Length: 118
Length: 113
Image (tube, rainbow over all chains, first blue to last red; front, side, top):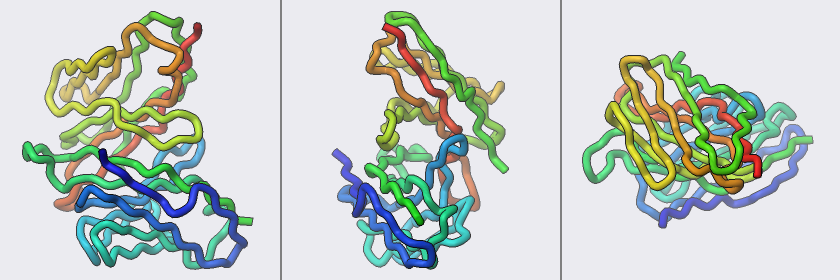
């Protein structure tokens, strides 16, 4: 079974703090993703990575950065937390290409981190 | 801007009936289509994926894809109370040589005992 874990289930931080969210997957997946999920807005992609030390901006990267020093670990960093970053943060991973060669591989999600910024 | 549209619901279906969930997408280059189920307070979990036009069945679930009309649907037969959840449609296209999923906002399904 694919396992994606996230460092915290709940987190409370103050405005201006630097926040680190960690994600680890144990299936040797190339792709890793960070989303945030807000009511009425659905899942929005923040950043993704297709390889170690590689990162690509998603749809809403402003205010965030990422780090991928090892294949299994993908970190999301809020450089200076703001109240509008209060959200559910979800990490996901997937293969680059499925064994059958099909493109667009299934993403497996971690349990999520619910972040509250005061 | 690629878009994936779903009716937000709530969709109420009696237990034992067929629940039908629909999704339309804007990018004609989309290649892969996924249905995720998300229980309240939990993360999304994959139910089905479909790549080719037509129907794909897995137990009580059937995914239907019509690329010409740009829609994908999910049918749940013999609906159970445990099927009550939000269902997310996700579409994968080719974006700058890489692939990423675009999610709809989800349809909230309630199965009435």
